[in-house]
Image 1 (tube, one colour):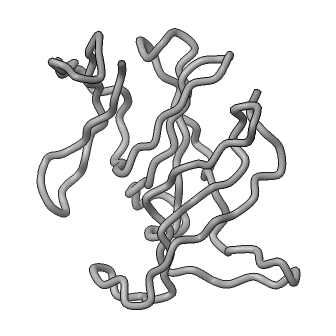
Image 2 (cartoon, one colour):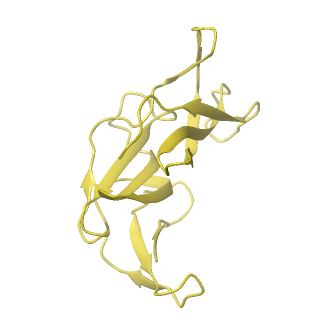
Length: 151
């Protein structure tokens, strides 16, 4: 079992690392080396035939939009080495069924819902249009179809 942890304190850069155990009951051992040099939180991990995938909320201020951005990383060797994508993992606007979209101030806490074959089918994220950095105000959960599964 592999899990992700990230914590240095509130509103400080967070560095992702791994927790490993032979059973879900533990004990868990923290792998001390960071996975990659990125300020991320809210990691969601899953496996496919290709390897281990990770979606997360990126807090890197070098990106275009601070509150809405997502990040993606991939490991082909069961979490030993990781490739961190420079591209944002999800769009800054939420597409709606009527072909319009909603501008979001925040989009975080990613997770996925899978289809019957085990492929990612929906992206779930916490979203809000409230612009205050620490308040969610009108926050809700977006359930968005994915246009193509990761094999």
